[in-house]
Image (tube, rainbow, N blue to C red; front, side):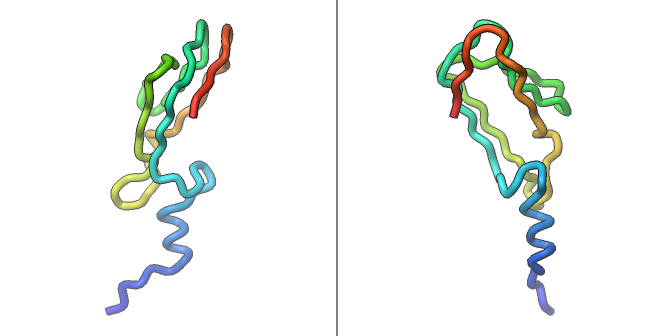
Length: 86
């Protein structure tokens, strides 16, 4: 039996226009924000406000290589202050 994966199948599993080829994300907050600047995961009904020295980590794909759409997130605008992160 041939168990090889075609390049198209590989791309479908490990690449998407929404996340690129990202497997996981680690976000480290370098500053506090006085107002705004949250990271919002809409599918999880989760809002994380930046706090200097804190970090977020999540996998962007499931163990089967498919995109985990629950990890879709957005950055809210900073209303007062500055948000720095890596």
